[in-house]
Length: 208
Image (cartoon, rainbow, N blue to C red):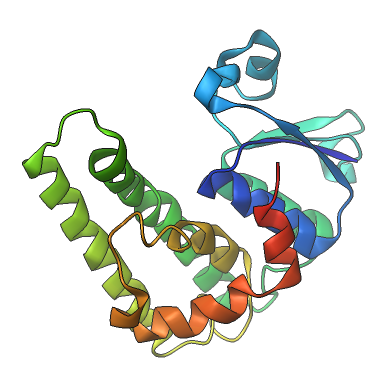
Protein backbone atom coordinates (compact mmCIF):
# COMPACT_ATOMS: atom_id res chain seq x y z
CA UNK A 1 0.00 0.00 0.00
CA UNK A 2 1.14 3.52 -0.85
CA UNK A 3 0.13 6.55 1.18
CA UNK A 4 -0.40 9.60 -1.03
CA UNK A 5 -0.34 13.02 0.59
CA UNK A 6 -1.91 15.42 -1.86
CA UNK A 7 -4.29 18.23 -2.72
CA UNK A 8 -6.24 19.16 -5.86
CA UNK A 9 -3.43 20.97 -7.66
CA UNK A 10 -1.71 20.15 -10.95
CA UNK A 11 1.30 18.74 -9.10
CA UNK A 12 -0.91 16.61 -6.89
CA UNK A 13 -2.92 15.32 -9.83
CA UNK A 14 0.20 14.09 -11.63
CA UNK A 15 0.69 11.45 -8.98
CA UNK A 16 -2.94 10.44 -8.48
CA UNK A 17 -3.25 9.99 -12.25
CA UNK A 18 -0.12 7.83 -12.30
CA UNK A 19 -1.40 5.71 -9.43
CA UNK A 20 -4.74 5.23 -11.19
CA UNK A 21 -3.03 4.38 -14.48
CA UNK A 22 -0.74 1.79 -12.90
CA UNK A 23 -3.35 0.22 -10.66
CA UNK A 24 -1.01 0.33 -7.67
CA UNK A 25 -2.87 0.19 -4.38
CA UNK A 26 -2.91 3.50 -2.54
CA UNK A 27 -4.82 5.59 -0.07
CA UNK A 28 -5.02 9.35 -0.30
CA UNK A 29 -4.54 11.72 2.62
CA UNK A 30 -5.69 15.26 1.81
CA UNK A 31 -3.30 18.03 2.84
CA UNK A 32 -5.26 21.27 2.66
CA UNK A 33 -2.69 23.80 1.55
CA UNK A 34 -5.27 26.55 1.88
CA UNK A 35 -5.16 25.92 5.63
CA UNK A 36 -1.35 25.49 5.72
CA UNK A 37 -1.66 21.82 6.66
CA UNK A 38 1.55 21.15 4.71
CA UNK A 39 3.42 22.78 7.58
CA UNK A 40 2.16 20.29 10.16
CA UNK A 41 5.00 18.47 12.01
CA UNK A 42 3.75 15.04 10.92
CA UNK A 43 3.82 16.02 7.26
CA UNK A 44 7.29 17.51 7.67
CA UNK A 45 8.48 13.98 8.49
CA UNK A 46 7.27 12.86 5.05
CA UNK A 47 8.45 15.88 3.07
CA UNK A 48 11.08 18.19 4.57
CA UNK A 49 10.17 20.80 1.92
CA UNK A 50 6.55 21.17 3.14
CA UNK A 51 5.05 20.69 -0.33
CA UNK A 52 2.52 18.29 -1.79
CA UNK A 53 2.57 15.71 -3.23
CA UNK A 54 4.54 13.14 -1.29
CA UNK A 55 4.22 9.39 -0.90
CA UNK A 56 5.16 6.70 1.58
CA UNK A 57 5.51 3.25 0.06
CA UNK A 58 4.99 0.56 2.67
CA UNK A 59 6.14 -2.17 0.30
CA UNK A 60 9.06 -0.65 -1.62
CA UNK A 61 11.14 -2.45 -4.19
CA UNK A 62 13.90 -4.57 -2.66
CA UNK A 63 16.56 -2.07 -3.75
CA UNK A 64 15.05 0.49 -1.38
CA UNK A 65 15.12 -1.79 1.66
CA UNK A 66 12.34 -3.29 3.74
CA UNK A 67 11.30 -0.21 5.68
CA UNK A 68 8.59 2.18 4.37
CA UNK A 69 10.13 4.54 1.86
CA UNK A 70 9.05 8.16 1.36
CA UNK A 71 9.49 10.19 -1.82
CA UNK A 72 8.77 13.87 -2.42
CA UNK A 73 8.87 16.08 -5.54
CA UNK A 74 6.26 15.09 -8.13
CA UNK A 75 8.77 14.28 -10.88
CA UNK A 76 10.77 12.01 -8.60
CA UNK A 77 7.57 10.30 -7.46
CA UNK A 78 6.56 9.62 -11.07
CA UNK A 79 9.95 8.05 -11.82
CA UNK A 80 9.76 5.97 -8.64
CA UNK A 81 6.26 4.72 -9.49
CA UNK A 82 7.33 3.95 -13.06
CA UNK A 83 10.18 1.83 -11.71
CA UNK A 84 7.92 0.12 -9.20
CA UNK A 85 5.18 -0.69 -11.71
CA UNK A 86 7.33 -1.21 -14.79
CA UNK A 87 4.96 1.08 -16.68
CA UNK A 88 4.93 4.45 -18.44
CA UNK A 89 8.68 4.94 -18.77
CA UNK A 90 9.89 3.52 -22.10
CA UNK A 91 12.46 0.73 -22.08
CA UNK A 92 14.09 1.95 -25.28
CA UNK A 93 16.99 4.23 -24.32
CA UNK A 94 16.15 7.05 -26.73
CA UNK A 95 12.45 7.07 -25.86
CA UNK A 96 13.25 6.83 -22.15
CA UNK A 97 15.54 9.83 -22.35
CA UNK A 98 12.95 11.77 -24.34
CA UNK A 99 10.39 11.06 -21.62
CA UNK A 100 12.81 12.22 -18.94
CA UNK A 101 13.75 15.36 -20.88
CA UNK A 102 10.13 16.41 -21.23
CA UNK A 103 9.45 15.54 -17.61
CA UNK A 104 12.27 17.89 -16.63
CA UNK A 105 10.91 20.49 -19.07
CA UNK A 106 7.62 20.38 -17.24
CA UNK A 107 9.25 20.48 -13.81
CA UNK A 108 11.52 23.38 -14.72
CA UNK A 109 9.24 25.45 -16.95
CA UNK A 110 5.73 24.32 -17.75
CA UNK A 111 4.88 24.17 -14.07
CA UNK A 112 6.72 27.01 -12.37
CA UNK A 113 6.06 29.59 -15.08
CA UNK A 114 2.39 28.69 -15.42
CA UNK A 115 2.11 28.74 -11.65
CA UNK A 116 3.36 32.32 -11.66
CA UNK A 117 0.76 33.17 -14.28
CA UNK A 118 -1.92 31.67 -12.01
CA UNK A 119 -0.73 33.83 -9.15
CA UNK A 120 -0.39 37.18 -10.87
CA UNK A 121 -3.43 36.87 -13.16
CA UNK A 122 -5.91 35.25 -10.75
CA UNK A 123 -4.84 35.58 -7.14
CA UNK A 124 -2.56 38.55 -6.57
CA UNK A 125 -4.25 41.26 -4.52
CA UNK A 126 -2.54 43.86 -6.67
CA UNK A 127 -2.43 43.66 -10.46
CA UNK A 128 1.21 44.04 -11.47
CA UNK A 129 1.36 44.71 -15.24
CA UNK A 130 5.07 43.89 -15.54
CA UNK A 131 4.65 40.50 -13.85
CA UNK A 132 1.49 39.67 -15.81
CA UNK A 133 3.17 40.46 -19.13
CA UNK A 134 6.36 38.62 -18.20
CA UNK A 135 4.70 35.38 -17.16
CA UNK A 136 1.87 35.31 -19.72
CA UNK A 137 4.44 35.85 -22.48
CA UNK A 138 6.53 32.96 -21.19
CA UNK A 139 3.41 30.82 -20.81
CA UNK A 140 2.54 31.37 -24.48
CA UNK A 141 6.11 30.53 -25.46
CA UNK A 142 5.95 27.25 -23.53
CA UNK A 143 2.64 26.29 -25.12
CA UNK A 144 4.23 27.00 -28.51
CA UNK A 145 7.18 24.74 -27.63
CA UNK A 146 4.76 21.99 -26.61
CA UNK A 147 2.69 22.45 -29.76
CA UNK A 148 5.78 22.23 -31.96
CA UNK A 149 6.95 19.02 -30.30
CA UNK A 150 3.52 17.42 -30.54
CA UNK A 151 3.35 18.30 -34.25
CA UNK A 152 6.00 15.61 -34.73
CA UNK A 153 5.15 13.21 -31.89
CA UNK A 154 1.98 11.50 -30.74
CA UNK A 155 3.06 11.80 -27.11
CA UNK A 156 5.85 13.67 -25.36
CA UNK A 157 8.12 10.62 -25.39
CA UNK A 158 7.27 9.83 -29.00
CA UNK A 159 4.89 6.94 -29.61
CA UNK A 160 4.33 5.98 -25.98
CA UNK A 161 2.13 7.56 -23.35
CA UNK A 162 4.42 8.18 -20.40
CA UNK A 163 5.02 9.98 -17.13
CA UNK A 164 5.99 13.05 -19.17
CA UNK A 165 2.42 13.31 -20.43
CA UNK A 166 0.99 12.72 -16.95
CA UNK A 167 3.19 15.50 -15.57
CA UNK A 168 2.22 18.03 -18.24
CA UNK A 169 -1.48 17.30 -18.65
CA UNK A 170 -2.74 18.66 -15.28
CA UNK A 171 -1.06 21.99 -15.97
CA UNK A 172 -2.53 22.16 -19.47
CA UNK A 173 -5.91 21.37 -17.90
CA UNK A 174 -5.83 24.86 -16.41
CA UNK A 175 -5.31 26.55 -19.76
CA UNK A 176 -8.22 28.90 -19.11
CA UNK A 177 -6.40 30.13 -16.01
CA UNK A 178 -3.46 30.93 -18.32
CA UNK A 179 -5.75 32.83 -20.73
CA UNK A 180 -4.84 30.22 -23.35
CA UNK A 181 -7.21 29.05 -26.09
CA UNK A 182 -6.18 25.52 -27.05
CA UNK A 183 -7.58 26.11 -30.53
CA UNK A 184 -4.53 28.33 -31.06
CA UNK A 185 -2.33 25.28 -30.36
CA UNK A 186 -3.95 22.53 -32.45
CA UNK A 187 -1.35 19.88 -31.73
CA UNK A 188 -1.69 20.43 -28.00
CA UNK A 189 -5.46 20.13 -28.36
CA UNK A 190 -5.11 16.92 -30.40
CA UNK A 191 -3.00 15.46 -27.57
CA UNK A 192 -5.03 16.96 -24.75
CA UNK A 193 -8.59 15.90 -25.58
CA UNK A 194 -8.14 12.10 -25.68
CA UNK A 195 -5.89 12.10 -22.62
CA UNK A 196 -8.46 14.00 -20.60
CA UNK A 197 -11.03 11.39 -21.64
CA UNK A 198 -9.01 8.48 -20.20
CA UNK A 199 -10.89 6.92 -17.25
CA UNK A 200 -7.74 6.77 -15.10
CA UNK A 201 -7.06 10.45 -15.74
CA UNK A 202 -10.61 11.36 -14.77
CA UNK A 203 -10.35 9.31 -11.59
CA UNK A 204 -6.98 10.83 -10.77
CA UNK A 205 -8.34 14.34 -11.18
CA UNK A 206 -11.01 13.59 -8.57
CA UNK A 207 -8.40 12.91 -5.85
CA UNK A 208 -8.51 13.94 -3.02
